[in-house]
Image 1 (cartoon, helix red, strand yellow):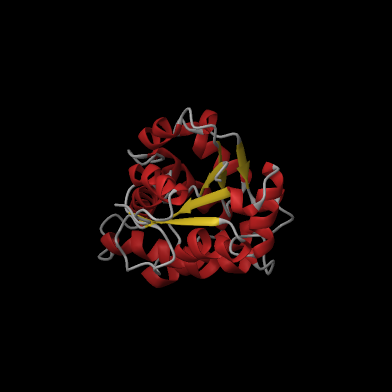
Image 2 (cartoon, rainbow, N blue to C red):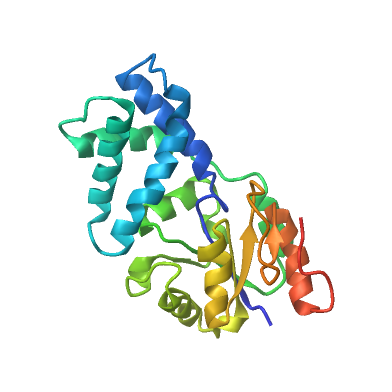
Length: 241
């Protein structure tokens, strides 16, 4: 029986891509107002996140250092001067990023639909606690979550390490098979947790590719209640839109 649901945060409850698009564009405009690649900066920033975040996850550099590396390469790829104070320049990017913080419109209705089911709700994120909790407060979802679990609280373990999911279940006082994880990353949020017996649901907002047959897939959070019903009734449908 599912007793708890953990949600990824960025691109699941929180519209990270929208905030990055705003911040990358505004920051670049502040340096080069008519840059010919201005419209390409959001995709570039997201690509550099994917490139540099793993070094922090692996303990090869600090969280601040991966930010510096990301901004340094961002400038280099765009032919912009590299700021002499990368931390100060990144703080300016963060100011724009925070200005655009917003929840996905399906997040609150989905949480409303789960009320009264006796489920523990929380967040399991690879981010840092101060920023992720600030996001939840800003978008009005912090009070809806009983726990916010980050690597800091999980022995330094990041998704998709098995220890991350096992520690998360232990923090809830539950067995892994009693926990469901929902998120936008197929490996981290849907396939990874199943390796330790936890349930995973892939939120494929952008309809990227077919999911493995064993992985429930939804395209909006409003499809989650149907997945819960299917998990209680294995003979029924296991996928929802």
